[in-house]
Image 1 (tube, rainbow, N blue to C red):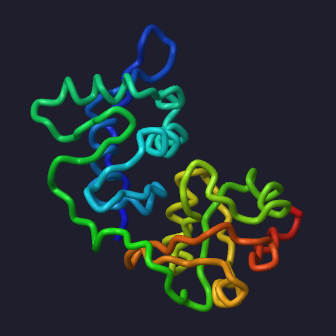
Image 2: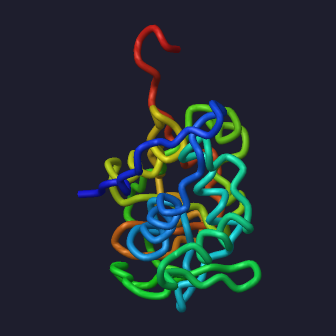
Length: 206
């Protein structure tokens, strides 16, 4: 069962809010790069490298003190570590050891399940209804094989995420490319609106 990395007690800095904890940041970066990149919608290559911009974009919404994370914060995180846990080279980063990934991501086109799921923030629904699902900063759209995993991914973006149902079989038949990442994630080309089902809001929230 998925568990987020446990945070340290919040530290205040001159009454201006929580102070950035580099040990907390290092723990979360390790979790993202070593164990569950799918949860952060990351796309590690065959050697475990991830674009720094992609990692930062995934981390910034998680905590208020991370909202302005930059590559310099990652460099400081690595310098302060007791041992080298991460390797940073220009615009990419990877974990040095300890991977427990269920298989490297593979991008060979394959036939997807009939249905996949995508967790997102309610604020993104207007754009999705207009444009469908787009990769944004990533190379692919990320989807999950079951709604529970999609909800976990969406919870990284919003406290009350929305889980979309993707008619993946029909989208694939229409020419949308799908790629098996591992047992936790499916990747795809942009998915048109016609293959996306948005759940109805609860009564009184429409």
